[in-house]
Length: 140
Image 1 (spheres, one colour):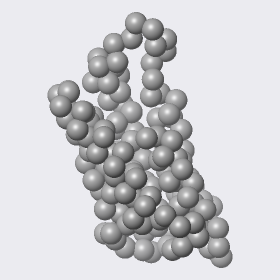
Image 2: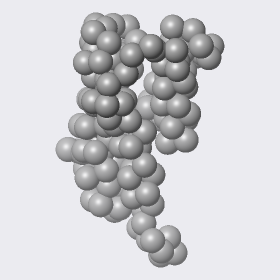
Image 3: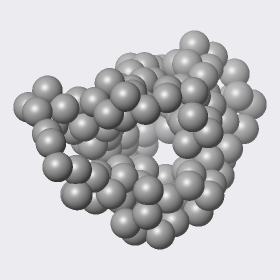
């Protein structure tokens, strides 16, 4: 799922290749999504994996990762409204809003059922975002 999120970020950034005017602040804001995904990918799995209780890890040590993921979604969602003046409440951001609230639920909840439902829903949301809004490279 994280790999799909990285591909989606790359695809959205690729769509900006023809933007004629960039500021350094716009570049920094644009990079918050991929940069946020990098530490998430690094922190995702405990070391060493042998003998690790992944359920305990998911409900304990992963909490900062869920908060980081929520922050990453907020920053990545605000990129186009802040830099290009687009509407933050656009349909293209619907999956981002759902993922933000899902990450908050994962960070707060220790209930296994929440984690068992939200994570597969995230996969569907990322796939939906790819196929519904930005399937063709170069389209706006």
